[in-house]
Length: 256
Image (cartoon, rainbow, N blue to C red; front, side):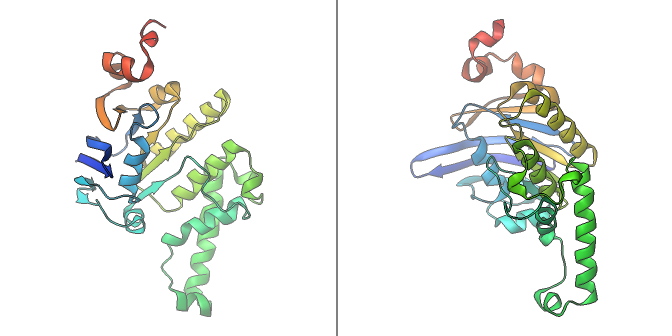
């Protein structure tokens, strides 16, 4: 049974189908890449999976339960986390404070307990701080824990967003262009981090334009063009598919 499955998912905006009859799945422990030219529907797929949009038709299943149309917070609570192309953190807070804040979906104490500072609330907050330090260590940012998020380098900010996503204890992590703007050396470190996340039991679906990164880490690759899926397979299969070469990689890539 796949962890995530999209069945003939369509999303219309007015008369335009941003995604049309798209089907693919991600099995537990896989790294799945979602690629295609700008405007091909990749981010729309992420928005549908994470609950920002509801499908116009079709269904999305997570752990064999339909999540199509559920609000974002309920999908997140089920174990789906996401990072974004643009920075999604609190710039004036430190790296540690950002990760602590991201734990809010896991805290069980209510507002009343928080106001009274009951022992349970204090213990939960202490545990969140401790785990936040562990997550910063995991992504290689513990030495930056006291630095404001907006003072971190761009690659470090993307690592921070991964730590914040992991704070929600996801089963599935959606990474939206995690390698954007990175140098080759930074992409190597990102690759290592993605493998680390996978190795602790988190399934990953990522949108990425860096083909070397995608082809080097993914178990399966889904290719979209104009909102439609045109190919799916292993990285080797995708690179040998004529439709992909024509629509995305460019015909010259076949001879490079």
